[in-house]
Length: 469
Image (cartoon, rainbow, N blue to C red):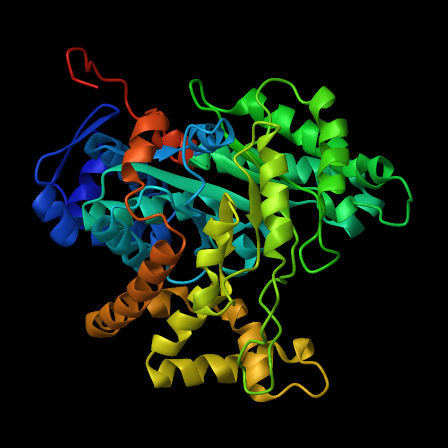
C-alpha cells in the first residue's frame, strides 16, 4: 500500500475496514465501513485537497466493486423491452440529483431496497454539472458511496442527461462546440456514466417543410456522437444511448418525425444503435411557476406518448422517454407505465422537497443570497415565490458544504422526506420488484480504475499475484 493511501485510510478512520494491495481493494469490515468510514471517505472525495481527492474517489469505486455494486448500462434491459422479452408495465425513473447528492442518493437507495427496485437511474445534465459543481467523477463517487452506506448490491445506472449541443455556440464555432461535448462524453464514460442522452434536437430546423430535412442536422450529429461513444466505451460495456427528436417545451413530437429521424440516423450509425428516443408531449423543464410558487397543471398527450413508444420499439428501442415530468400531480405518474413509456425524467420536484425540508434559517440565508446574486434573472412581475423557485437551483453548488455539514438530525429529516417522494415515484411508475429483471438482463462488468484515472499519482508497482479479483 502506498503511503498516501495508508495516510488517507488512517485519517478517515477506515484503515481497519478496507484492505489495499497494489490496485486490489477489498473490504475487511463492512459494518464498520458503513457506520463511519464511508462518510469520512466520501467527504474527502468531495471536499478533500487535490492530493487526497483522487485517491478517495478511486477507493470508493474499487470498494463498491468489491462489494458487488457495479456502474452499469441499462441498454440490455431496454433492448429486452424492445423485443417484447419484458412487459411494458413499468417506466424507469431517471432522477436528476442536483442537491446534497450523498443524502439524496441514500434516500433513493433506501426506497429502492425496500421496494426491490432495480430499474432506476441517477443522472445529471450538462448544464446542471456547472451550477451544482459536480464533475462526473465526483457524481459517481458520491452515489456509489451512498450505495455502500445503505448496503445496496447490484447495478447502478449513471446517466448523462441532455448532453446537448448549444445552438449559439455551434453557430459561431461548430468544431469547438462538438469537441467540447466529446470531451465531456469521454470524462463521463471514464467516470462510469454508461448511459448517455445525446441531445442534438436543439438543431432541428422547423422552418423546413420536409421532415427529413428538419431532422437532418439532428440525426447526423447524433449518429456522429453515437459512433464516437462506441469507440471509447469500455470493453464488454454497451453504453445505453438516447436520441431526441424535439426540444422539450416546444412543439409536441409525432410519429412522422420519429420515422424521419430514424430514416437518417440508421444508415449513419455504426454498430449498436439507440436504446430509446426522447420526445416532447406537453411538458417543460421546471414547469410553469404560478405567483404563489406552485406549479401550473400541464396536459401530457399520453396517446401520442404511447404511439411514439410503440413506433420506437419497431426500431429495437425500448420506447419513448418523457422529460420534465416531476412537476406533474402525483396521480399522473401511473399513466406513463400505462402508455408504455420506457423512461421518465424527474428533477425539479426532488429539489423542491429538499428545500422544503431545510432548516428555515438556512433557507432564509439562501433566499437572501439569491436576491443579491441572481437578481438579473428576475422577470418583471415575478413574485418572491416565483423568483426563488426558479433560481434556487443556482445555490445548490455554492451551499453544498453547508448542506453536508448540517446536524445529523436535520439531514435525516431531509432523507426521510426525499425517501417518501422516491417511494411514491417507484410505486406509481411500476418499478417495484424490477430488481430480478435487471439481474436477468444487465451484464455486471467490473471496470477497474487507478488513482491516475482521477488525476492522482500512480500507485507503486507491487506483486499482487494470487489475489482474487
